Every structure is written in C-alpha cells, then in structure tokens.
Image (cartoon, rainbow, N blue to C red; front, side, top):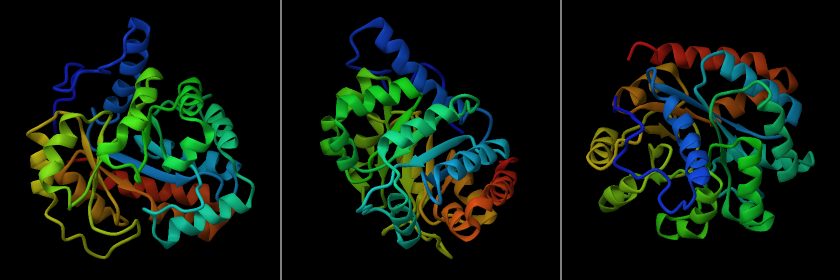
Length: 286
C-alpha cells in the first residue's frame, strides 16, 4: 500500500492560482485519497439511468452501504468506444429512457444529500464538449463530483479539459493500459486522484482470466508517483477482485454490476448491494 499523504510527489492542483481554488481542488483529490486510506478500495461503476435514475440512486446507496469506497457514474453516450456489449446496451437503454446530462447532475445533487464517498464521472469527450467544458466542470464542482475519467481522451490531449478541471476542483483521472509501456512514467508523474490501470486490451466486460503482467505496470507507477492506482476491466468475481487488489490499491468493477441491473431492473439495488459486499469482503484482509 502506498502512503497517500497530503504531500505528494505530484503538486496539488498546479496551475490553480487562488487560495480558494487550491483549497477546493485539493479537497476533491484528498477525498479520493481517503477512499484508499483504510485498506484496498472497491470502486463500483454504474450507468446512470439504466433502467431509470431512481434505480441508479438506490443502487449507488446500496453499493456504498455494502462497502463501495468510490462510485464511478457513467453518463450515457451514444458511442461509448471503451465499452463492451453489456455497458453499451445500458447506454442505449438509458438514452432511450430520456436520460440527459442535466438529469444526471440532478441525480448527483440527490445522492449528495447523504452519500459521502467520492463520486467520479466516467464519460466521453463529446458529452463534455456538447455541454460546454466550463459549464460542465462548474456544475461538477457545484454538485460534488470529485473526478472525471474520459477514456477517449489520450494523455497528450488532456489539456483540452485540464484547465477547467483544475479551476473547479475536479481531478482528471488518467488511464494506463498494457500498451502504455514507455509512457507509464510520464502519465504517472502527472496523475491526479487515482490512476486507472486497464487490466487487458480491448473493451470493458467480464473475463475468465486476466493474463497481463499487472505487477510490473504497478511497479512502474510506484516508481513515479504515490497517487493510488486501481485495476479495472474484466473483474467480476471475488477471487479476481482480491487478486487485482493484491497487486494494486483497489479493484474497479463495472460490467458485472451493470449485468445485475439489466437482469433485475428496478429490483436490482439489493442484489447490487449483496454483490458489492461479496467483492469487498474478499479484499478486506489484504
């Protein structure tokens, strides 16, 4: 486990020019760091609005009550290029049900009445562009979003969004893939919030085996930052969650949770809670 102190090798919110701005920015990143302080973090991904926003809210609350340390909220998009069939289908259902970015922000406002764990958006560049980057990040700050993941934005192009993230205290979370190789040090040195390590090539979805040498990737990360790193893509069983958390700081699960929501619909939240508990329990003693 890394030592996630407030003094990091990474300057907190470099480029934020006011004391108030730095306080807001650092607070969001420290909330994310807090998710990793008391053991390995379990991170749950849920597509907003599948089958409806009320069910999403209930599923988030059940996940948190059963041990989720951080929640990734997926804003539906018509062309989610990083997603496999399960999450693609959830995006289609949510959009068909009338979910919009404004309705997702309303969901976050509702969640923040009692949900205190970090909330991170995972969506795509066009969602932010179409809403307006300044307006989008300002609303993230207002509603209590701690981080933003844009899987279709390469590290080299993050400056399109980074100034807005810093201005509004939202950590821009980077991904490291098995193909990142020589870019790992560069990405890690500028990491914010946490690093999302992609377990396998391809899109999201459950996998029977994860064969990537993730320990070597994590070691390269460790040499360049003390920001926590969590592994996602393909994790679906307690055994996989434990194995991935054993070599990193946490496990990220999406498709398996989205499958539960697809299977049980409005009755899914209690099943999501039971699933999250089984995953978190497998990681507790690491």
